[in-house]
Length: 224
Image 1 (cartoon, rainbow, N blue to C red):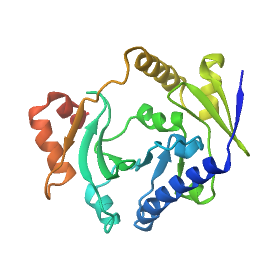
Image 2: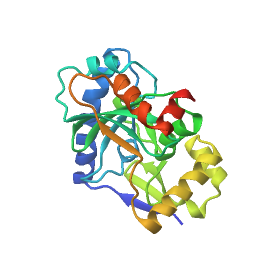
Image 3: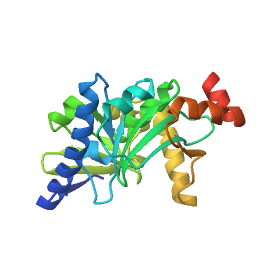
């Protein structure tokens, strides 16, 4: 059974403010020929005060190109992260406590790209057009944007193939995300495998090579 949520003015203003924040960064990247996406609630529209402004660059690019594109933007931290030993290794540039620009440091697998589509994602041109897209939130609710807000329905009430078709992803990623998010409900939020801060003038790539020397799992993903 679906439930319709109507947004009030405060909700629309919050959504607009977070989109504007993302648009500034996406514009700087686009001006340097770098495509980026936003994903999650900021792409769907169901934002909250604490919702993150997550920008992801799906291309495998030299990190210096990304850092040059963001020249003039004050950053808090540069770090390398990996959710699990087999998952994609990413660079993250933390702008502030809610805003991050991330990018892959290794070639991404199709399923890893589908992760972003599962939660809902859009590119810069769609942001300019004020588009919102369907996606599944952490409660495993399928969020379907409407003119006045959104409709939501538990994906347990829908066949996985319907969810996959709605989001343009594989059934495999739907089943995988259900398993992961159900487990998170049971045991609480789990940590990530790797989160290492980059100091000084080191590049993301040189820092990753140093990590790979001491970490066989990272080394295997680099060689994959």
